[in-house]
Length: 439
Image (cartoon, rainbow, N blue to C red):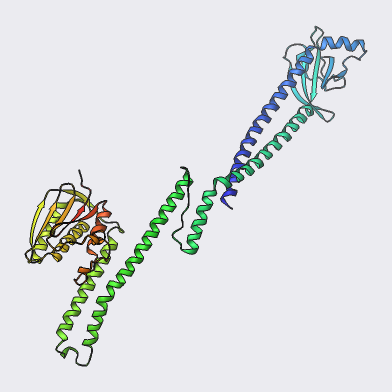
């Protein structure tokens, strides 16, 4: 069943239930009111018996006759003798007590000649010990209630149908954005077209849902585009070392094999290509891990972490000099990821620094790590792209590396709510990574 029909049924059911409850209350209240009104009319008729009796005597009605006054049947004064009936219900012992004024008047429902009556029995307003009965057929009340019940039933059913119809018509307008959203989702499912968007005006929940869907589709489209680009770039970067490695292995597999004088060089070249391939695979794994996988975060001393990175770099790179300004700084981050990012900044500086060059590492209390080298610098045209995946400037394409080191730095920074920046200097370049500090 469609959502529009469910809304229509729900609206009709609510209105029908409300009208049904209101009709039941009105029916019961009107029934009690009618019975009370007829009871009052019976009491009033008995009180008027003396005046009516005078008029009836002039018309020569027999004693104890049962006469009609409108809808009321009135039995003229009847001697309070048990068993006496005079054409109506017989006198009971209770009636004898009422005639003697020992018991108060009372109302009862009785059946006479197949007809049910509402009967009021009271002493005749005089000293002779007689009874007076006033009765009205219950059918008079029931017929009025039947007509009321028919009218209320028609109103209830018609109200429910009209409410369901109105709700269905209104639901068509209200749910129109939902229908557009459904069509967009079905379009994406069928065509895999991630450019689908849904226009949404207003501030209600449906409009918010449509805007959220559009934002989600934009994010998914960007993610798929990035993944495709990553796969394409990775395939290109992997092809070179794999081709070189395969060529060296084929040469070693020829007739002379390892006895060839060039075999040691081929083995060394194959090892270098394998190491480059290993580094590229590790960089791809880290690039996918930082930002897409939940990691352990804790309060981390950024200055102490940078100090450890510098100590290891100093042991590996003997052709450059290191200096540092490490102000105490506390950040909440994944220590392994941040250490990798700082290490990539330092490795990039080592890679481009000439022999005897100086690399300066600075940690500021505001959460910024900067690494300054004295290399050839970065051309202005390359500055916007140096943190992109697999980007390598023309000058760097002949050097080892995958073009993922600085991309990992940006990935780590953005994952922790930080930023990266590059500042060209008169000699060299300064790369910065900023993370939110703990105040």
